[in-house]
Length: 390
Length: 46
Image (tube, rainbow over all chains, first blue to last red; front, side, top):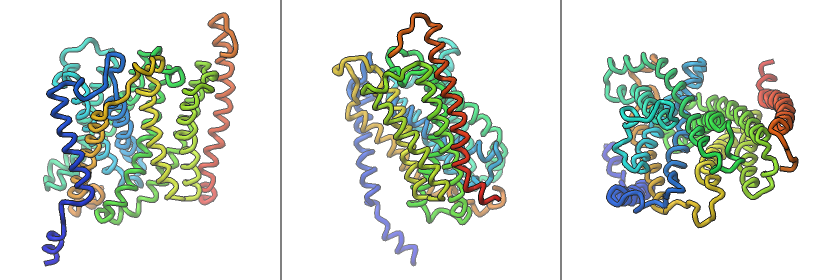
């Protein structure tokens, strides 16, 4: 009886569903325009700016923020930090969806998306960075899919296949760390080819190192941020173990993020010194660079540290948002704001509203799929049949 | 670019000199930062 009442009370027209539905309808219409009218119909991309918001946000930010998967699984399975085990499944799911959406978004951005598998068959050399990024992303998406499979297999009750998938965990984690190290850094290395186009404060021979180190920050902060939102919206789906381990996960990840942010701050300063770019800090681009460096690197590092010392979870959770915004800002600065900085403003790129709408559409699809999965599969709780196997 | 450099060697002598000093400061700084970060944990363990 009570079930019937609950079902009858449920309405499809919740605020979330209405907003998400509206965005998805708009996104579908623009998708039709994109694939019938071509890139020019929906974007402001040009020969000067062939990489726009879909690369800057959907790909660069998407890949960085999906780093939680390899960071968490490395901490738990490679470094033996079992106390963070409850964070693995949500982090792997976020990572898997993040990468899946990156590949989805690439279909919009690449002029002829049916040629995406070409690097594996027809290509101009294995020394190409873009080949390396393409190969790593394709392989890592497969690895994340396999890492994620135990959850749907438990849900479907396929015990034997699930056992096989669980046995692969360590191997997949090692693959995941290797592939992530390669392509997170290579995404930064892509910009090494354009030293005259990227502003000297953002251009550095250390760009691959910056991208890799900042991806660790993104991964750690994203796990905290995602768990904060999940605790708010899906607390009823969480078991005792997940709820009780949460404080330890938040404090541990915040401590790591604080320290890595401090290291990242140092290597950014060393980058300025190495290229003797101090004089540029007084320019308008320099001030913007300082906003990024002090406001979104030094400040979150300090706030995380204070949060960890005082065990102030609220401060840590807000700081994770600041750190995530910092990663978004950094990737957009490198790919859009500081890119082609010498061109006159009439030649500069600003995304078309339909590009922004497609990015919003892709994020919405990600949230909807995430919600679909966590409300059905054992992500925030151990499946009753496999409680002892974790 | 406040200073004028006439050779690449001049440039690298200058920038590497500054960078090396910064690295020493950074190494000391990061050690102090780590102790600031872990101070309360260490006190609890003791």
